Length: 116
Image 1 (cartoon, rainbow, N blue to C red):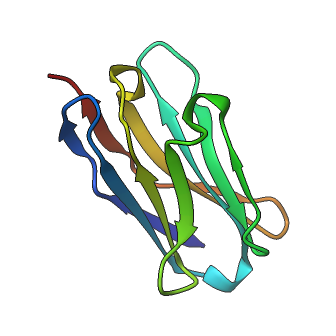
Image 2: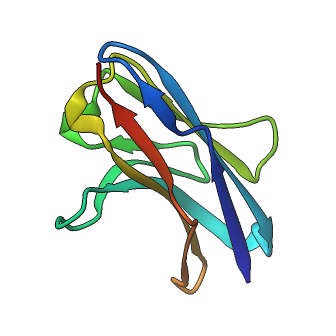
């Protein structure tokens, strides 16, 4: 089992920055892929950014050039640096971890609100 805890959400003005963190615990050495997703009520959850064990990253077109996914100081932490935030970035952000064998785990989500 893997447990994920997100932190760092909040309210920010347009053009501002936020940094989200996700810390995994439990069977962390079985994780080969981590990602951030976001969801707006009434819409499907969508991929924001992902990173694998080789530190290869992937971004949604809507956030390229503004968001950066990276590993923290420890293997089990992944951060999402969000710059130049726009009202359209308002959503609940979820951390995802994928184990070898394709079991998927989700965090509880953290709210990001971009508003003046």
